[in-house]
Length: 444
Image 1 (cartoon, rainbow, N blue to C red):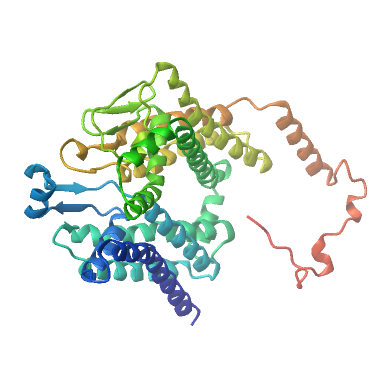
Image 2: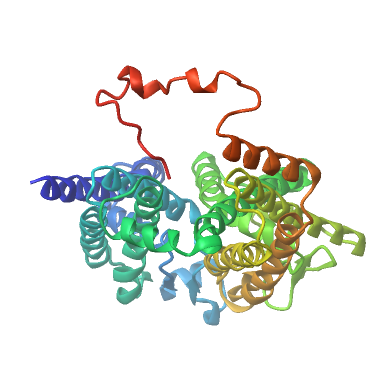
């Protein structure tokens, strides 16, 4: 009965995640639809628009084919009437990842994480399939295969990450515990998997903070250009609202671009363009306000910003080394080297996935090439994170670490604490019945 209940609750979580994402689109679209077209609007186009945008937010590309009447009325070239949109607004994807991770943690806490992950993913897949089959439009089409696969894949990654991370820390009396026990038998190498994951999480969070700082600095320096482009658009209140909401959902995408710039390789805004610390080469770009934040020129001296990802790697290495010292596992050099390398590879992998999602097409012609170069960005981040992590993890052990280790060894040999001569009189808290059964849980 418990497994069935966990599956039902996980399915409800998945349904809520999908419903919230769709509602976030439908609510403002309904208001804008009414303001733009009035009460006599064709409401049959509202759901397809919301459904296609929801799929687009989960990485599904959109193939746009403008009708001949629109092409003639707007006056655009016929060859520009058909194009693809594949630059993902990552805000929707990040929301689904976080919500599904929370659901996975709850399933793991209930003791049936695998059932919860499977149930939630299947429910989300059914909803994604229903959206793909019902939200159809002649102007904008999505590939059905991608629409069926990508949204559930996003949910699966989040739910599985949350469930496994919780089960690894707290135990699940099943598969993860057996795997954890096997890893514990590796001797000095037992700390490698857990500390590598810890270091990767720290590095990714640090890079996210650095990216946000980079975007904030550009807003402070070039906010005037962005406002000027906003004013040049000459849109009414409805258009201004659409532009503002569009920039908000693309904010995580801008974070990825910021990381690519800080790492060194930079990114492109159209074929044959480059925006990097070493130099900026831009042709004519769309008049979107966010693109007003792009630096007009750069200098080789700005390559000093690559020290920031190195600092993120060093911070991750420091956190991991502190844990190794606390667990008396900092003596072997080889495990520390493997941890540093694993942190670099895993962080580079996360950045690679983000770069893939933050690059693509935003229009016809040269605008089909936009975003960071996945290969160079991944290589740069991996190398910089490894340098920083290796500096902290492979540095010679300093006096404080050695003194702490000698103290711990002396305490273990003497069976008492040098600062507590009456240590034998001290009773553990559990002897007073704090846990009810006078037993002491053994944390991992």
